[in-house]
Length: 295
Image 1 (cartoon, rainbow, N blue to C red):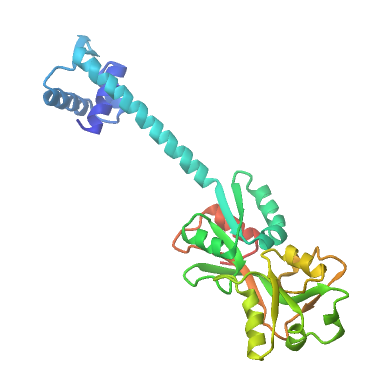
Image 2: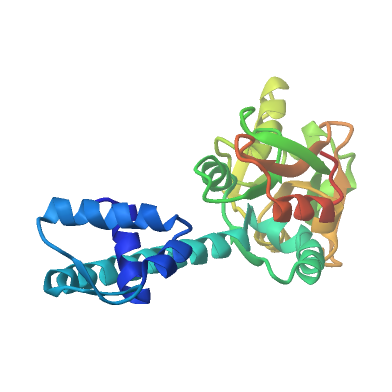
């Protein structure tokens, strides 16, 4: 039995005539007749009988086959509906992943503006490490990733967004502010750094610069959140070497001071990256437009 034969037989018994079955299946009446004859030949029995001019019903054997055909058509409709539901759900979903500081300090106003323009899109925002963002983009678990582009793998498509600068952040009363801030003065104090991983190496830039100068250093602690690092620095545990864009410093406590280190380290960029083998959908493009990005 072939699929088109089952469909034709179902409509024939359901509608009671070859003419209506042909219309329902977009076939000619002779084509439906041939389908039924082929089924009867395969099964070795008569499946339909004519009770009046143009009206047919199922035989006893035909009724048995019709039960199967009903189940088949019901399951077919259910599968189609489930696929449509999945497609619709997928079509309206946008999964964005970024490290905590980017997600909490930089994105909120842009997310709100996008949500207002596309309320039909279900946004899913994931805060995770840069390594996890890269992994999720590669596996296509995430649609768009945001973060420092310096160490994003070259096989992922990247778009620059905001400039980021290196800073020393310390309490206003810290001794480092009593002398010029340079590598020599930085090396004298306990350091607070973001974790150094495969795709997040902000701290390694400072340690490498100190090592090249032959200067000693002591890393007191590492923490993944800028806010947490700032709080530790505020409590006198050390000076925080940070890589920030302007939005990340808006809520800096008033008793904390910053020094931009553009004379020691070049600026970098936070940006968007994604799997370039995946075609961008309209919602992806609209979110990039919301960020003001040129592609």
